[in-house]
Structures are given as structure tokens and as C-alpha cells.
Amino acid sequence: MQRTLLVSFALLASLTVSAPGRLDAQGRPWGEGYFPNLPVVTHEGKTVRFYDDLIKGKIVVVSFIFTRCTDICPITTARLAQVEEKLGDSVGRDIFIYSISVDPENDTPEQLKKYAEAFHTGPGWFFLTGRLADIREINGKFGERMRSLTEHRNEIVLGNEATGDWQRDNVFGDLDRVVTSIRAMDPKWREQVRTPQKDNASMGLVPLAGPPGQALFVKLCAGCHTVGKGDRVGPDLNGVTGRHARAWLSNYIRDPERMRARKDPAALALVAKYPSVRMPSMGLSESDAADLLSYVELLMYRLSSTQGASEDKSAPPEHHHHH
Image (cartoon, rainbow, N blue to C red; front, side, top):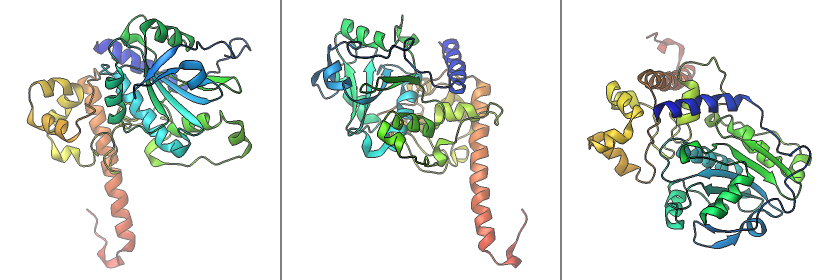
């Protein structure tokens, strides 16, 4: 289990470097008649036709999840929720997000509704389930032909059915770039040249030679945590090394599930405060955990030194101390 996870992270790291791939099968786009018009059920319990009601004439973002997944799906969904936030009110108006279950036998609409609520998803984002054979056929059209649940793809698919433009992408790279790719599916948007908004939370594409822990933090932690910008899906990590012993943090990062099972009081306090989404066990090694903690400390240090610098500027010269 740990090994496959680390392999999938290595794969994700390599994916973020490659450009998003266009999905025209040798110049034949996924046109009319490509997507089956099978019935699917939304997390609100409504039965709709996949092609007619969800795909036809729309700009869509499709991801593949299952609610019992305790490794990468919650992180994919958290990253996609950041994308939804950046897209603002165009979701549900011009752009629709669909998270299709790869485990429809266990993912009931009720189950999916709880999952959607945990990530605070808005209108225009639908979590879909249905009959196993129907869901398999739909997912297969997106290239999702998994042999087992742990092998499903963590990429997303973007498309505009009206123009026949489809491409694969993934949410483990720079989120502003993903948002731009989604908006660029709309020919009207492409005509109005815009400068993408820069936002510190997205931290840009990770250079492969960044500080240890940076790439892991951006891909695994930043979807749910900030350092100094407030709570997200989980707590703000600023000052976390002052609140908990390092050994506790290392154990918790590596296997939060085990700490909860042991009824560790600090782990249970986190469950009480953030009940809907549990931090997943990601199969990280002790040295990964150490790298992540060093990187969080680096971000805390940068934060305190920028605050210190701005206080210095406003202070009269005789107050300069050198610590």
C-alpha cells in the first residue's frame, strides 16, 4: 500500500511537468455519439441522462473519485475545490464540474452528498453514481479503465462538447494554469485577452530543485492547509511546531488513521473540530515527514521575517535591534 502510493506520487510529480495532452483521437474529436446517453444519479438523488443533460453543449471538468478512498482522492477533490473557488460564479453557469464515482456499488447518492458537503462544493458541481455497467461504460470513454480501485486515474478531463475540444489535465501543478485552461475552453473567453490573477496560495509550478518538502507540500498539503492564511479544509499550519511535539507531528503526518484508532487526544480533538474530512494516511516515510515539517518551518520563518521587516520599516531608526 505504501509503495503503490509513493509510486503514484512519483507519477504525479512527472505528470505535472508534462504539458496537458489534447484528446483528439488522430484528429477525430470526441463528437456526437461518442458519449453514451446512459442514466446517472446525482448526489442530490436526481436521475439524469449523461449526454443530454450533463455533456451536450457544455464546458465541463470531469474527475474520478470514490468516497472510501483514503489516499489521493481527497487531495484531488480538495485541489479541485480550490479551482472551483478561483472560477467563482461561472461554475453552474458556463462551466460544470462532475466527479464520477469509480465505486458506484458503494457510493450511494447519500454517501456522495456527505462527501460534497465536506468540501463545501457549490451548485454546478455534481457527484455522480449509477449502475456499475453504465458507470464503467461512461468512465471508459474518458480513458478510465481501471482494473482495481487503487489504480484509477487521478487526472481530470476538460472539455467543451460544442467545439469538440477535449484535453487531460491534473490538479497537482499550478492551479492558476488549470483555471486558465478551463476558461480557455470557451472561445468567447479566448477572444478577450485577460491577465490571469496571481494568488500566493497557488505557489506557482514547483521547481524540481526547490527546498526539501516543497513539492510534497504543494501537491499533498496545500489543498487543505495554508501557512498563515487561515483554515481551509483543515487547520492553518502556522505555529504548528510550537503547538505539538515534533515526534507527534511526524507520527500524525505518517499515519493519522492509526493515531485516531489509538484514541490519541490531540488527534481526536482535530476530528471534533474538522469532522467531515479526515486527514488521509498517505504512506509517507519518516524522512518525507521530516522534509514536510522543515518546509512548514521555512514558510513560518518567511512569514515572521516579512512581518518583522514591515514593522522595521515603520519603526524610527533608533529602534533597530539585531537579534
